[in-house]
Length: 465
Image 1 (cartoon, one colour):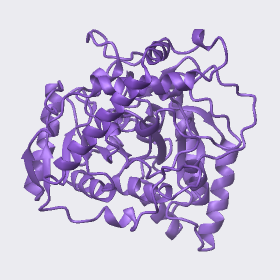
Image 2 (tube, rainbow, N blue to C red; image 1 turned 90 degrees about the vertical axis):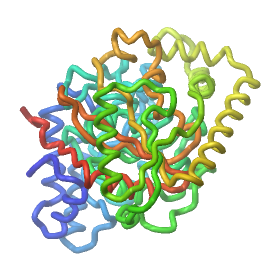
Image 3 (cartoon, helix red, strand yellow; image 1 turned 90 degrees about the horizontal axis):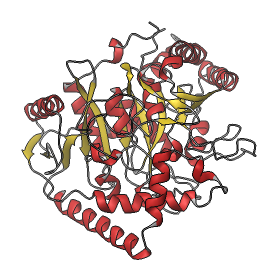
Image 4 (cartoon, rainbow, N blue to C red; image 1 turned 60 degrees about the vertical axis):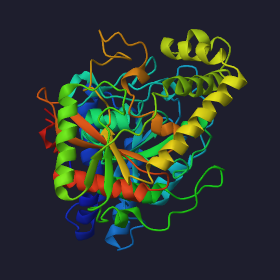
C-alpha cells in the first residue's frame, strides 16, 4: 500500500476492509526503516506497542465497533509530551532516562482513548527552544524533500515524519511557530489552535505562548485530529470548554464572500522573492475563488523584543530546575537564552506581558474588519541543516527569520500553515491563515479552500529511494 494516503483515506479503506490497521502500521514502520536513517525524525520507535495497538484496532473495525474517527491511524507524538511507558527526554541530556514514566499528557491520553496507533516519539531541539531541530541527544533532523536542508522546528521531527510517509499524523508543540515553521518547510499542514483549545500538562514554562497542534498531510486530517485533541482535561486550568461543533464538519464551511486581509510582510518583515510570488499567486487564486482579499497590514511593529523577554524568562525558569552542572551540558544557544532570561526583572516580564495584551487587543480590533489575516508562514525557503539561522545571513537568533509566526503566539490566535507551492529548487512554501481567538473552525475552512485551489502533492517525494 502507499505510504502517502491521508488519514481520512485510510479510515475509509478500513471501513470497507480494503486496508487493515495492521497493514497501514506495517507500512509506516517500513517507511521508518527505509527513510529515518537519513531523515532522523524519530527518537523512539516501539514496533511492538504499535503493532499491538494496530491489531486491537483491526479487531474493532472487523466487528464494526471503531472507537473514534481515527481509530487505527499510525501516529507519532513529539518528545515533549509525557507518554506512559516511554521516556520523555525533551531533547536534553540533562533529563534522567532512568525514572518512572507512568503519566500520559492530555494529548497522549486522547490519542489512546480514540484508538490511534502510536508509532513512537519524534525529535525536538532541547526543550523545544528554537526554530530548527537538532540536539546533542538526537543529532540533526533533516528535510525529506532535501536532506541537506533543515526540517524546521521545533516540531521538525513530527513534520518530517508526516512528510516522509512515516505515519499519517503527528502532534507537535508551538511556542513561537514550532508547528507552523516545519509544516511550511516540509510541505504539510500544521495548526496552532487557540490557546487552551488543546490542554497541556504539565504546564509549559513558556506559559501563555505555548500551544499543542495537529500536523498532517491534509486539512481534513488536521480537523479530525483536532476533534480528538480538543477536549478538556482537569490538569490544565487554562483549558477551554469542549467545542460546540465538530471541526471535521466545520472545515467544509463555505467561506466565499468573507473578507481576508493579505499582509505580504506584516509591514516589517523581509520575504524571499520566490516565496513572496508563490504566496501572492495563491492569494490571487483565493480572490478569484470568491474570498474577498484586501491588502492590509495589521499595523503593529515587530514585537520581537517583548517575545524575547517572555521566551527567555520561561527558558530560564525551566532550566533553573535542572541539576547542578547542566549549564555545561545544554545546547550552547539555549544556554545563551538561559543567561539572557536571568537578566530580566519582574518589571521587565510584566512590561512584556502588557505589550502582549496590547497586541491581542489590536488584533481583536483588526478582526472586526477582516475575518482572517493571510501572510507567508516563513519568509524564506528551508536552509542548510545544523544551523540556527541561515548561514551567511548575518542573523544571530531564530526569531529573526520567523517574524510571521511568534506574534500570533503572543496573541494566542489560531494560525495554520498550508503548502501553496514549490520553489524552482524543489522546496515547499507555506501560506499562513490567522483568525480571531476561538475561530479555529473558520481558519480550517479557509485552509481547506486554499488546499483545493492550490494542491501540493507530496507524492513527488521519492520515498524509499
